Image 1 (cartoon, rainbow, N blue to C red):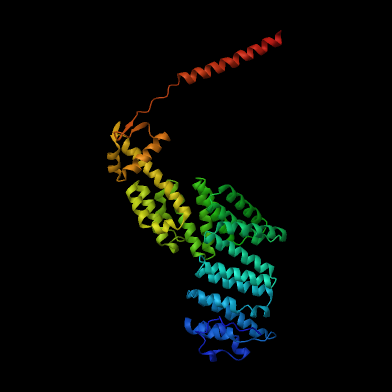
Image 2 (tube, helix red, strand yellow):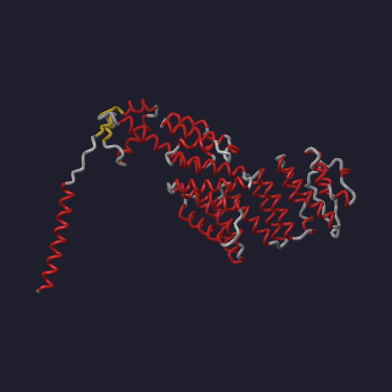
Length: 440
């Protein structure tokens, strides 16, 4: 029998008489809960979960297992993370009544439901660590490895990259010995993401290559394949290969959509729209957003990318600045988008400055700053950078506050042609010398 845990919530079990008393009635417990409203269903399922079940009562064990899963789903839907964490702790004695495979699946499902509610705070990390320690005590190695993989993901989400790499490295060595390729792919993908966050692109690419190589040798579920495609797109976009990145993001978007992964599908859609903008094709963004597949994911993210596309199509720096300010929270939450938008802003700023400077041979920097409606120091700094990069031919007279622009000089090909002629004549002389030496 399961031992009672005082930490398990009692606020919904005031009417335990609702619990079913016979095996025949127990078989319909979960189905009956679906006909009730949320609060009544939780009261009903709490009563079923708290009822003691004999180890030889297969029907009662199965019904209780289903009730635990359904109760976890309801708690997750109602964002009751504390009660859900208490449920995970409470059912541990009951897990000894079912097989290790079923108990591992039940724990993983409940933990995933908890992470849907709260995946970034220390509470989630502490709960995952508790489950790992319990798995070690019960000598459930397979469950422990799965939970450690989830802990690596939590470390990544919370920004604890060193802890994620340390645990991931230990887990990788263990998984390679056991040849658990499915979990190995997941850990290698997480390692690639961690290295990308640390801006170590070479190691991130190497980890992703290892993950894709391992995945080619097994059946890779659509969800995992979509995650691999998403990371591949991120790395290609980082290398300025936006065309290949767009292809990967589109594959990832379709994969997440087929798995009903709404959040990940929305992220992939946002990235493929960004790639379209960076490919200098912002006019294609409205057409992409009106496709049947993309209509389901309309929201703040797509509205923000649509605004960026409009600003780029109009080549308006002020519009882009307004969009970046308006959706600052949306952009700052995603470092991939933020990196590329900074690059996009710089490019658009350079194009606008080149267009404003072009008619002048000598112009005040303050006048350029007024025309472009930006801070004087920022404009002066950007012009200096463009001169050093040879994007502008000229000099800055900082004392007088003027920019002097030079006319591009025509390339004189005389010296180049002379050098080529001399090199060709040298080859002819060498050839004649070699022939003369053979004759002698």
